[in-house]
Length: 90
Image 1 (tube, rainbow, N blue to C red):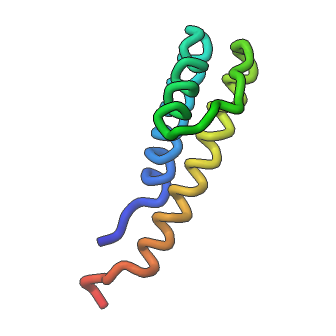
Image 2 (cartoon, rainbow, N blue to C red; image 1 turned 60 degrees about the vertical axis):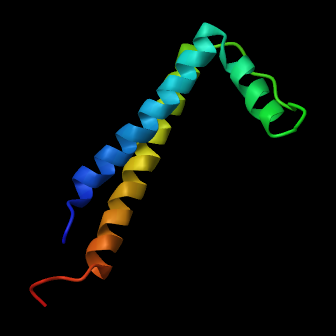
């Protein structure tokens, strides 16, 4: 089975961008620090990080960069899949 590299890249890029947009939303609401503190607490770790105030430009850069990297990774993964997956026509 072959998969479309561009479609796979876009789906993966959108997935990662949406995840990071959710993170930026939590920062904007002021809930991110509580989430980080809980995650570290649940893993028996003293939280070493402090979340900085929300900046829309920085959030846009984060989301755009992650989308680009995710798209490239998904595209490469699809190319690798297509190169290694058994092909019925072979």
